[in-house]
Structures are given as C-alpha cells and as structure tokens.
Image 1: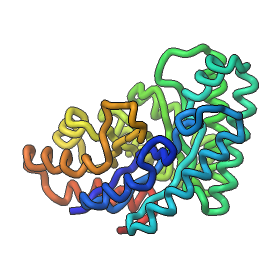
Image 2: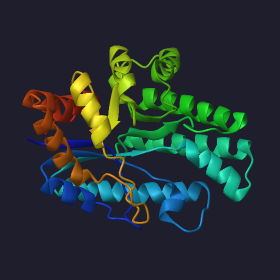
Image 3: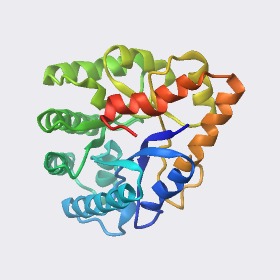
Length: 282
C-alpha cells in the first residue's frame, strides 16, 4: 500500500526541507505536495516582494531535491490570507500596500507556473478567524486574481477558507464559475471539514482532510472515498503539535484496521484521487 500527502509545508532554512520526502518515502509515501510558508518563517528580515521571491526560490530547489529521491512531489506557492494581517500588524503597512504586494506575488507565481517551475498557487483565500473588513476585502481580491491566473496558466489552487460548510463551497463556486474555470478538480479545499466534502465533490472540486485521528475516523466511517489526506506539516521545529507526513501512513493503517475498511477505499484516497486532481501517477 502506498500513501500520499496532498498538502505539506516545507522550510529548508529552519526545518527539514527535502528530507521530509526522504522520511515519507521510507514509510511507503509516493507523493507529496509542498506548499510555501510565509517569508518570516524562513528569514528574520522581511523585505517585501524580494522576500517572497527568495522563499519561492528556496522552495523550488527543495522540490527538485525531493523528486530526485524518487518520490513524486509538486511545488505550490501563494499569498496566505494570514500574511495580510501579519504585514499590517507587524510592519504597520496599509491594506492597499498589502493588496498591491499580494497581487504582485501571485502574478509572479503565475509566471512560474507558466514556466513549469511551480505547479500551482496556494495558499490563497480568506481568513478563518475574525479580521477587519478591509483586510478580508484584500484577501478576496487576491483570491479572485489568483483564480484568474490559475485559469490562464493551467495552475492548481489550494484554498485557505473559513470552512463554513456548504456556504463556503457555494461562495467559492460562484467566483470560479464567474471566472469560467473548467477543471474544478484542480481547485483544492485545503483543511476541509468532513461536512464539506460531499458538497465540494458534487460541484467538481477536490478537498483534503487533516490527518488526525478524530477527523480521519469520522471520514472513513461516514464518507465515500472522495477526498485526499494532508498532514499540513509546518516544517518549523518550534511548532510542536503537528502531524508529520511520515506519520500519516501508520495513522491511516491504524484506522483502516480498527474500522475494517476495504483496501480499495485507501487506494482511491491515496492514489486515484491524487491522479484526478494532480494528473500525476505513481
């Protein structure tokens, strides 16, 4: 049995970097999607757009190293909605400055997608916590721009959202339909609630569930195999309560054995759904 991690972060400066893939492969991992963090997770000094460029350069190099190990990996970079609040609060920037920065970053990432250096954009989306209205407006504009860029450059998108069940799905679906994106499977509801999965799938989207026991147990016992699994590993040594990619296989197998799940169910989640979303085969 082989396993996939559809959403993990990577930090070669302060974390493990490509060695995540090495450890995951040892546990029969075949695929991992590496998502960018925020520049201040990599570097102590923040220099605006240059910091995003530098971070993405590091990330792309690590993805290449991971692929050289024989594990399939892709590189996805975005402008996280939490970055908006952080830059405004930490550096006393105006919302309009952050809007211009975010648009510049996702346009740059779109060009890298076009060149084949990045596989997609993410995370982009909206804050899942209380924020100021103008900040949420900024995140929505950047999200819609990212969707437009993804359509033009055939990129995947990983969404970070408020996860308000079907309402979140329908609101996103409105934006996607307005932009006229055809292949909705390349749009991923990251860290989705189990209660969102069926609605997202029925509207044509992909979704990932957080790889912890309560979430997976509920999903495996109540949902058809129409989702992928993610570790959402931060690759930051100072963050202790995490799920590591190389821990996912055993977590999945433990629940598989406890609930007596059909092996085809796990194959669908770990292989076929990844193939459908990412167009990558083992």
